[in-house]
Every structure is written in structure tokens, then in C-alpha cells.
Amino acid sequence: MGKEIRKILIANRGVTAVRVMHTCRDRKIPTTAVYSTPDRLAHHVFMADSAVHIGEAPPAESYLNMEKMIAAAIQSRSDAIHPGWGFLAENHKFAQMVIDAGLTWIGPPPKVIEALGDKIQAKNLAQKVNVPTIPGILDVTNVEQIKKWMKHDKVTFPIMIKAVAGGGGRGMVKVENTNQLVQAFAQARSEAMKSFGDDRVLVEKYIERGRHIEVQVVGDEYGNIVHLYERECTIQRRNQKIIEEAPSPSINDDLRKELCFTAIRLMREIGYTSAGTVEFIFDSSTKKYYFLEVNTRLQVEHGITELITGLDIVGIMIDVATGKKLPFKQADIHPNRWALEVRLNAEDPRNFSPSFGTITRLQVPQGPGVRIAAGAYEGADIPPYYDSLFMLLITAGSDRGDAIRVMDRTLSRNLRIEGVKTLAPLLLSIIRHPAFKAGEFSTRFIEENMKDLVSMFKEKNSEDEVLKIARYVAEISALGPQSWM
View (spheres, rainbow, N blue to C red):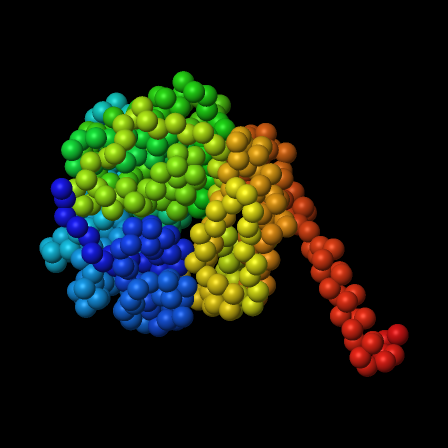
């Protein structure tokens, strides 16, 4: 038997922290929340069994401060740390600090996080086990190298310049022609330095009609590695996913098998443990797929995989961290539903500018086939310092059409949010779009259809009109005839 975990500190906030706490509650494991000053009344703080203040609003002073995280764990008598996603989740130094402090790290080993966090090293590992990678050049220090490579390998524009230490869509710049090269190169390096403290970049051919498909993998310390099938994460804005689904509508069963076993081959070579995701880009015009990266953490969209397989991925991470074997083999995994997730960000749906403030009204969707991961409550503030994601809406059905119908009901009938703008109108337009329904889209779907999508927004629904009339009637009965009559 492995070690026992008596209390878990969740080194995160919002939706992530709340998600991990749900599994801890199921398992009767007490939790510790950490919070910055503006988050003192946040949902995750109320939900935890104890909470520790770790600093002021800027992430560097709070959620990215490794020393404060460890101190909070010791102070609250937590013996394990789960990092969630974002912030310190893929920081190998933090993982090592947790272990050195005598605490249990709930995630893959630090050396695995380090090797896969570096895009160059990850690409080399993939090539070693014959996993197809996108044509490109590594460790680029000047524009001349890019021009030489394009000439030598007959590569045409567009190309993509990427931060080596990057992730989450940051430090990525698409280049359409030679005139943009110098500026794009400088921009990618400066973004990489700002976001990751590392200005190294690599350059790859940009896959024009790419589709983003990733495989969820779990592994234990005894060499057992199992895939939980794939997710499609193609619908993105600014290189960040906003709609995901499982299974993928883009591939057939033969390709599905090949992708999933390719992911297993790579993770086995690395000696991966805990939960992780192998990301691929699929070129629908050539039907070829290429390795993108490995995410050495829990993914935002893990919930759709849980819904189609009936497994608890956070629970598996906790079990593996305590030295338990995976309780299932590959042959035991039989997805039998279709699931869809949309990310509800506090943003203006017309231009994606952040929308901060107080949620004055929140009606959370319910009904058959709906799972909600909320990081906020009615009356809560959405602070301007962190990611604007505050809720995940996940729906499931017997097939894709069913899951889309349930999502339509969820977004159009059962969800009411006031006080901040959200992406809800855009998400509804996307799932109602004929191309989305037909499963015909690429990573450029939003930029190519934005006008069309915005034109589908419903400005006011009948309920708003009924409320307006009711208010007038009430005013007249209470105050008599009005000046505007």
C-alpha cells in the first residue's frame, strides 16, 4: 500500500481549485485554499476546509510565489499539493520544491515536467519514437536562419514562430510574408521573455486548415499507461480553446486507434505517470497528423473525457500520487457518450476585451445531461488580475447532435448572467452555426466567421420584454398616469 494523504492544498484559484475540491470532498480529504487579497471572498475560499492568505493581487506576489505556497501547506498542515492548471502547474522547480519539503506532489515527476515543458526537447523525444512532427527548425536566433530553412526545405508562408518554453497561446506569432518576418520574430521573442522568462523560439510551418486533437493519458508508477481516448479542441480564439468535445468528429476509428496508440508510445518512452495530454495538429486536407506538445497537468477540458468514460481524472491523479496502481486496463475503457464543453469567460463576445466587475445575477443551468464547473457565485467579483474564465458548461448526450441540443438549451434557456459581459452569445452562435453542426471547421473558424457569428446574437429576448412591460404596469398602478403617456 502507498502513503496516505490527509490534507491537500490546492495551489490555484477559481474554477480549477473548486474542481479539485469536489473530488477531495468525495474522498473525505480535507482541503486548503490559498488566496490573494482580491480573492478573499472567492468561491474556492468558502469551499475549502481551511484557507491561507498568500499575498497581494499580482500573481508573482501570490499564486506564482512558490515559497509562500510551501509555507501555506506547512502552516495549514497539508501533506500534499495539487497544482490544478495554469500558474505553477507545469513548473518543474515548484514540483521539486514540494517534494523537497517532504510533501506529496500530485502530478508527474519534476524531471518529466522539465523535459516536456521545453518544446525543443519534447519535439526531439517525439522524433526519437517516430511520432510525426511539424516541419520546422529549432532554436532560432536570427531571421536569416528562417529564410535559409524555407528556401532549402521549399517551405511556403504562412509559418508560426513559437516560444520554446511557451503554452496557453502566448509567445506565438503567425507570419504571412517576408515583410512581416523581422517584426514577428522580435514580437515572439519579447512575448516569450515576458511570459516565461525565456526568449528562445522555434519556427514551424503553419498548418492552414489545422484541427486540434489531443489524447488523454494516465499512468502509474508500475509502468501501466492507458489512454482515455481523444478530445477535439479546434474552436479557438487567439490560440486559446473555447469549445471542446469528445470524441472528435474529425477522424474515423482507424485514425483514432493510431493517434491514441501513438500517444501511448510516446508517454511510455518518457516513463510518464499521473494524468497528461498529448496534443496533435491534424491537417484535414492531407489527413496527416503531427505532434504538437505534451501538457504535463490536468487540462481545463478533462471533464468531457470524464463524462464519456465515467472516470474521475483528479481522483486517478491522487491515487497515483499515493503509489496505487491504475485499477483498469486499456480494454476496460469504453466511451459510450458524446460530451461538449464551452468555456465561459468574462469577456465582450464581440471583441474579446476583458469584462470585470460584480456578477449581479447568476442563474446556473440545470437539467438532464448538464455538468457545471463554477468558479464564482452571484454577488462575486471577477477581478482584473487573472484569467477571465469563471465557469465551464459541459453537456452530454448519446451522440453529437444530442450533446449540441443540450448545450443549446443550457446556453439559451437556462443561463442568466448580469453585471459582466460573457462569451455566452458567441458560444451559442457557434454551436448553432451550420458548419459547426456539420463538424466542418478548423482553428480559424472564429476569425473566418466572426461577422456571421455576431449577426446571430440575440440582443433581447422575449423575457426581457415581458419584464419591461410588467415594470411599466406596476409603475402606473402605483403612481397613476405618467408624463411619457
